[in-house]
Image (cartoon, rainbow, N blue to C red; front, side, top):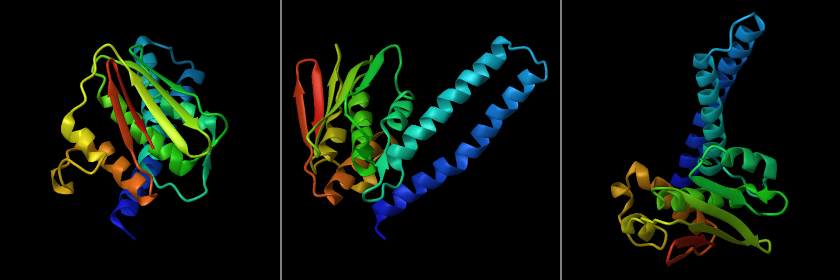
Length: 198
């Protein structure tokens, strides 16, 4: 088993182990309300935070977890996961018809992370698929700040594995996983836009 598989299995394991306690907290909050507890602003904050954490775990499971060959993931599951990164400043539009191969969804979500990291004040990210294989993740924003070292990782440049920071890990994983599938990554930059296709 290679290093990429181990990284993905660790990601899957962490996400799996966190789902149960988050679910238990949610059940506990529901029981408190059913037992006559007031829905206070504090409880609303905890409920909202819990929902955000659960969505993040779903996103991480798809983006960083194991993706077996031929396994499919439903559009509804992807949309639910994308809810974790949507904010009033960042819109993310999944425009892929039908369900997707899990390995394709994994690459797409890693690419979304890469594009998002170049948008310090938000913007719009659109994910499309041209035919069964060609994917495009397009970002548009008033202000873009792509960091050269990180983007160099996508095309075989940049630092070695030992120098990759936590803030760059999605770039390194996207490059590695795409390479394992013999899929070339193309990065395009223009005025107010940046995109990744594979």
